[in-house]
Length: 367
Image (cartoon, rainbow, N blue to C red; front, side, top):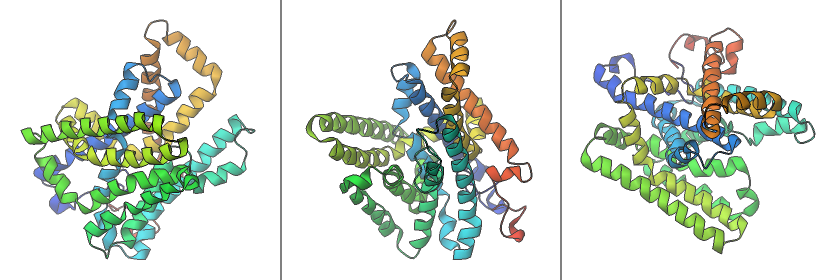
């Protein structure tokens, strides 16, 4: 299995006992739940169906959707600290940067072709440095990976504390408006907690069905959801827009931190649901191709008006509009993502997801 950002390094063969495999089932199921939530979220946003059932479920999953993804990414990044600088570049960053650049250019070209006036050509290249689409997660993983390596000589607790410092940059209104900056500062602490507190998360996962773990998960969820909503409502009345923006990003980080136990317990729970777990785990092992392709497809669906209008008009004659629209778009995104996964096995074309190793001795091995 490739060591993509969403397909973390697996234990060595000597560790691949049935118990070890069972322990990791929740990780794949959790990643599958995360990617399904992300795709549905973007479908809801473009369909503008927040009032429907899909929108309500998507809203409820907000505290765990992306935090769970970054927690799991950090959880399996512990080997970064053992790499040399050359290994960091050739065995980690290479496999993040190449698909990121390729898909950023493809997405930028799509936006330019659809509306050259609103999206001039120079923005295609700017998108690589300052992403404004869902591809920001790959950009963030590059940054987090580098920071994890640079701080490998520091105690884990100190690294986690330092990961909160970039939040101070939100005090600068101009910096707070930079999309990739406020995305990174909101989720960097989550990644570092996954990296440096991995034993604690595995400990919780092994006890996820204890009564106190269930109570903890529910309490954390309602606390995270309630505090953020309360702060948002208060801020909209008491703060100016720039200050509110910075406060809500900080609150988003806090919400994600509080809800981390919820995400772990939920991932373990869905990993015990039979065929549902199998389906989520299947998606969880293919999150990268789904992640990089789904928003580009959604943009195309809503950008090509005639296709969208004909399809939705036909479907809306027999099912509730909001539910069918989100369901259809989500299913299409998953299908295309799985197709991209298959294409990644084709020589040369496979660069779109997994570029060839820069080190011949690594080819054909688990990276």
